[in-house]
Amino acid sequence: MALTDILIGDEVRVNITLKYTDETGQLVGVNPDEVRLTVKKDNDIIIIDNQLALTSGDDIYFYDFTPNEIGEYTSIFTVYILNSPPFIIQQKVYVSSSSASRKPTATLKNDEIIIFGTELSPLYIDPESLLSLFPDASLLEIGEIVYNFSLEVKTILGLSADDAALNFKAIEYIRAAVACELSRTYAYGADDNVMLRLGDLTIENRVTPRNSVSRDNASSWCQIAAALRKELLANKVRAATMTPKGLPTEYSVTQLGRDVYPTDKDIYGQGQEITSRSDPMPSRKLRNYDWCS
Image 1 (cartoon, one colour):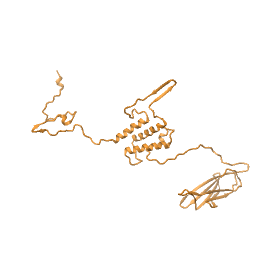
Image 2 (cartoon, rainbow, N blue to C red):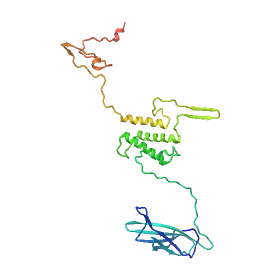
Image 3 (cartoon, rainbow, N blue to C red):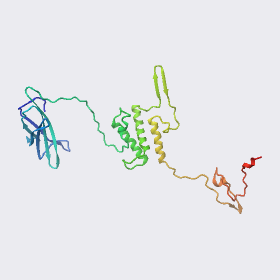
Image 4 (cartoon, one colour):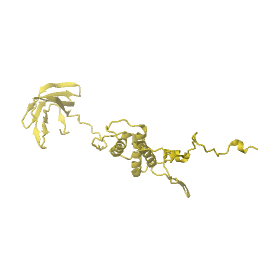
């Protein structure tokens, strides 16, 4: 309704139009069982109580009433449809007098942009947990990166369910990997070098390249993520076969009626010093008492 003044004694018509959008995108009228109206003054005093609204065709339902006091009137339409819960439509009417105007107070507000994203699963960590570290990043952007690395961990660990419980190492890897990806854009904790400049004095702490990155010497999100990923992969790698070193390769101790005694190296391999009791060869090792004078 327009914000022009409605005076005491003026006849006021409140009306609603009931339509819905069908599957083809066209507006189609609604045929309710009945529409009833309740009017309250200042949200407290009931002026009209649950009266049946009238219709003028074209899916328009209305009711006329005459306010006799200055104030704010709320019209409440209740629409009843078969096999559906009733729904309520409210309107505000402001009634003034010839000496006093009664108009609503306009409140200025800041515009807010709400971005809706599709449902992402799995999300093994809460995207909001990284929002404080990267305040310039949007929650949707963080969520998409968390989703990508959650899929990676799901593949590495061979998980079948999206809500499977992860160990602490896997959760920390996802958090570090997401922070590494965000730090490439927002430059929070992405560089190993720390530089302080005061006038002509410049102090720079440059980290030398590392041959092997671990959680002990990592100093950035990307290095922590790389170290944790190596640990995740190491836990999934196992030896396919194993052949113990030094297995006996000669089992025959006779040759043409002669006794043959294989050496320890032949039987047990390099580094083994096991002497058979049936070996007739004397031990040529130096004994402690050989050095005594």
